[in-house]
Image (cartoon, rainbow, N blue to C red):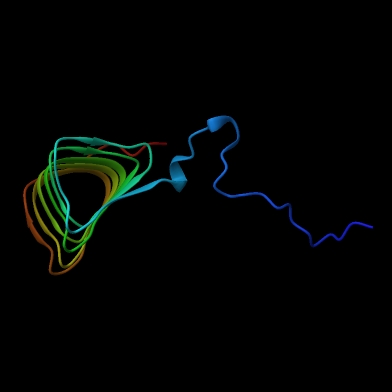
Length: 128
């Protein structure tokens, strides 16, 4: 008899058919790393180090130790660190410890009290 509580023994790291699963992909730029050049990812990027270039991905998190000098483009942008350039996102959050010297193009924006911000906020039409 089959036990209904049994789950198949499947390695979660296996990807049948080599299909990309962007929601599972997170690329970490660690605090000891400096990248000069652009980054493109179908998944998420977490920045603890420094990027001198553009970042284009699904979601981006710039931690307090993180710095981006260039443009950030993502569906969800969460900034705790420093960004100089341009920010474009559907949902953009500028946290109280962030320093943002950039024009921000957004559908939805969140600015916490204490955010250091210099630039223009430009609202994009909200997608249906």
